[in-house]
Length: 212
Length: 329
Image 1 (cartoon, rainbow over the protein chains, first blue to last red):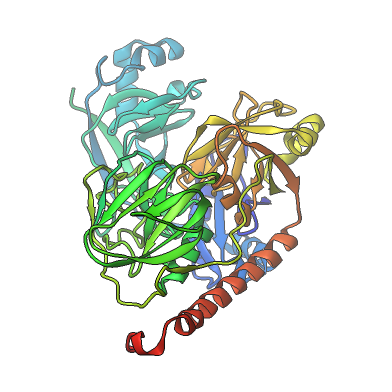
Image 2 (cartoon, rainbow over the protein chains, first blue to last red):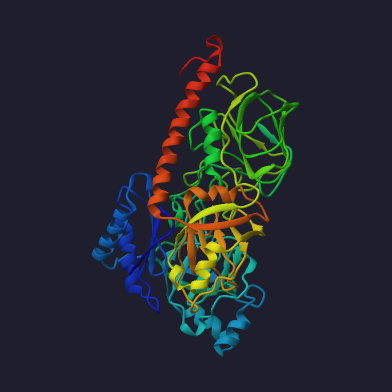
């Protein structure tokens, strides 16, 4: 367990090992829920095997906050979120998935096999962040894991179905991204006018369905 | 109504942002120089959370379609309300039809136009700030275009003829260099000793790639002892990330809430406004401080802000002849 400062008003709790650990992730969700009950804590933001905690510097002692984070982490237990099962229709083709060929080459597979692998896995929403409603999906077949592009694209379209490192994801808005684009979906991941703006929540299970 | 006469992708409605929306992946956002917006709101007796216009592209002109009280704070430069030149950090009443014309600043990079009662746009996810990436908040989720009519409240408070303002200007970066304070971040120790030394001894310049999302810096290359593959983690405005190029990027108000690059340090919260007021080509130096120093200063600043609000409220009463004062609510 490593705790580091992010400025005066935030702490990063990092418990990541070399590979993603689902059990640790569930413990992070539990710790986040407990920490958000603390009056001085503004938000507890789960990342991928880590947790960012922002707090009110004006009315709390950062050293005390560090102790609170340590204590809560020790007591936290893997959270059994019973998420929903969600299907995401995807169009996979050369036009919407410009990196399909790159990914296939990297994996030593044909494009059809890449699509089949991507659409047959069961993914889990491990963390929400980066962009409004963006989710880090774990459960990607390791053959499809491909490090991010050296030079991020300045513009990846909303709805792009993407792969970055060992994670799968979907662009919730048009933005720069270094992830690889393999398809497109019309599912709207974020709408601030909805009572729950994020379409996908922590613990949800996701399947991609090929509707090309 | 306020009519925007000059459009720009850089001028947006901002308040203090959304510090409680990170778990949805929503940036904190808000005024890049929150202190300047705070002073503008204080000059007008506004709530601290009222929205104003962040002006980062000049010249900027607006026409008022009703009698409004306005305040202009932050960067310093030539500002006219019709023929009248306005001093920096000044509040004044504008009459219907009057045009406020703001030339490029001589010092600083961002000005804030606050209006008594605030810019009246809907609250989205707890704030009125424009989230350009998400396309929500502010005025229709976008930057201000020529011809936009922004809803606002008519003047109700009496402001002395000719206006009033701060006698002591807000601190702005000096022309030569901006010194900003940093705290070490998670991967600080993973950088080679030369990189850690260069962070503080190096002369950094702001590249043309600086915006509300982040500032790319040019200077010595900051190298890791060994390459790191980090999982995505939450980051805050001020985080200094070092991508494989070795050239650091400082995350600013509209930064992504998560990132994966190693973090060498974080610019402390009170100094983000100095970066906000710096321009392309500005020289930046980093100096490491302790968290205790920063916390002590943040608390002192919060206290000074509260005092300023109280003092301005009582000052307004003494500046205006009692007969013309509006009735207290």
